[in-house]
Image 1 (cartoon, rainbow, N blue to C red):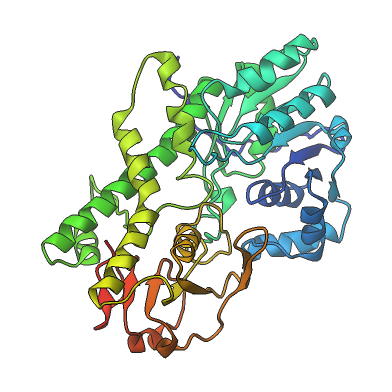
Image 2 (image 1 turned 180 degrees about the horizontal axis):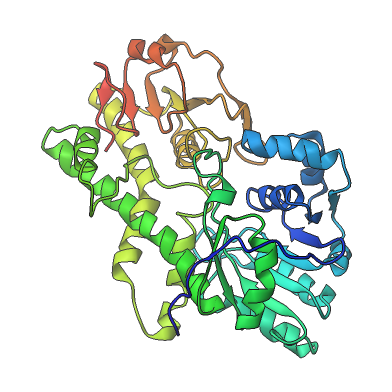
Length: 435
């Protein structure tokens, strides 16, 4: 494997193919913003998703995107630059195909490749000579070759010759307006150098800088390393929080003071666990193949175990806080404040707050939740809940805070009997140590 090539900036203007079109497969938190960026850059975009309901929500504007993307969506729907369909055959007419389907983990924390296998199989079926296929979904090292390059070759479509295949992972942080998609460098690794070159005209239009690495496998490992780095450091931050509490010290004060060092330190913060599409999932795509390769990553394995267990530790701590005052969790009124997986968004994927809510319900607590970004949620197939718009502090035996949304007035919490603050950021007389 070679080293990364020099970063490639936005190239000089070049003639694009007549009416270039990109088919974007999967219109979730990655596919939709990426499709909108491509449409804004002047490409024709065919958005393909297997769920008609998702397409209806996009047409109606009922999607959780940043303001700039909401404006782009309105513009794209008003002209022919964006076409939405559930028909996979539509990708056959595209110059490029961008795969943006989810790659979650199952209940056993094993990679669930079902959606990715299905999407790649569909691409292999409908691809033709001259197309560029860009895999953006995070997966294990070697996935691009296993799921695209080899199956395409069996159809006579040879990567680097009559078709081009690359891996270029997404780097979208939902709800983050400080790092817009175009300003974040894009990693690109081709099955061959010619493949990487073929993908540049598409990716350089939606990213100010494209960093070309030596291979698709190198790009795959870059993505896994990025989010494994974050997972390990969040686990460390939670451990430092335990240490600080044992010494009677303020965790956030320690972190904020440490971050004043201008080199060698990057701040991470403790919480109720790690949620979302990346941190709880991606490191398992790094870990899963290691036994077959005869190697181990014990530090990563332990970090993921710690993060996975954190919501259960919060639930146990809630039981202890109530028991300390002679109350049994069964029958107690509990309010979970914040059920989205992070501040400022409505995303519930792998949400620690949701896991804590469900865990307390299973122990017999009467649980409500308060989250202005999540008006309703389905607890299971039979039970749904509505967010309490204005909580009555006197109505609850315990309040568990898992997320603090921006500009959120929680002054009423000072009147609560007991507060379990998993963010470590609140300050009043009724706080209990989070763990």
